[in-house]
Image 1 (cartoon, one colour):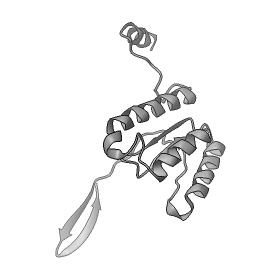
Image 2 (cartoon, rainbow, N blue to C red):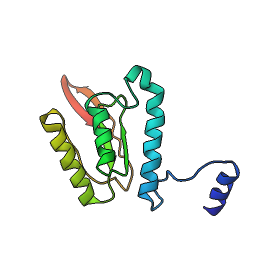
Image 3 (tube, helix red, strand yellow):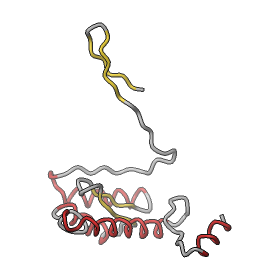
Length: 135
């Protein structure tokens, strides 16, 4: 790891946005910065760095309320904030839920430690009957 960091410094590459480092604040800052840079690329067609309306407002509020990192999914149908621990996550989720009222849904929970799981779904016709198949 030291060799990798030294080589990164030699070539002017900053190290800091790695979720494996025990530095949630640094990771969150870097993640937020990437979201803002990416959002600026699409600002002219999206209507701003973050989608205007509820999405952009929630990103602003999550930062104000202390989220370590914030961002939006493509074009802002979903917004996220990263919290340092379970209690902070619940508090943020409660505040967002109150802010949204009945106009949105809030999901709160931990990161998966084993990575994403992907399933393929297919529909097969067997002797005239449709069956959903996981594979």
